[in-house]
View 1 (cartoon, helix red, strand yellow):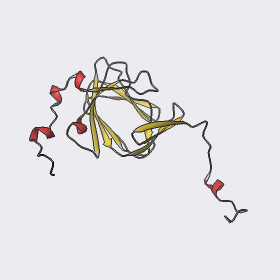
View 2: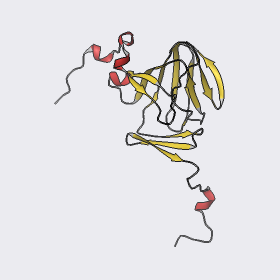
View 3: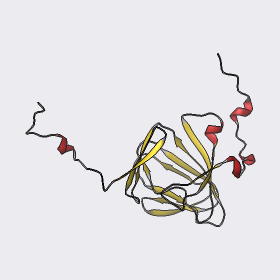
View 4: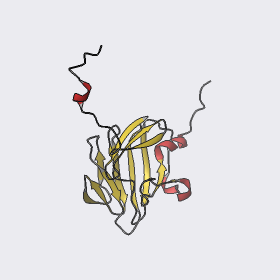
Length: 173
């Protein structure tokens, strides 16, 4: 059976009509100052491969926790307010009209609202079933899979060099 036809209105999110109650509050469980009011725009119109959200961070709050992606590219576009973006430990002021893009090159990043009004921005990127993120300030690696994030303590992990897998004294028999 064919899906019912969608109406033109089903493809449009009127952001001017969004209310705090229609969004979700995101707080990173390992950062008590993380607090974003999010409206997941792409989900509202049924998109599955690309994600775009409208985020709002109040003064003095942070978006997430410093992190770097290995699979998913991410971007931010500042609409209102002022803040700072931390990239590899350096903080740079950002404001309306600034676009910030993060390829999977290992750049550790985090957004802070250092202004006196809400910092409002678009955030988006790829939506994949699997992601590995580095959280250097926490000493953790996060693995996103099967709808959940698992954190692994890097100090407690076992490290192997490539050479550890090749043993000339053992021919594999």
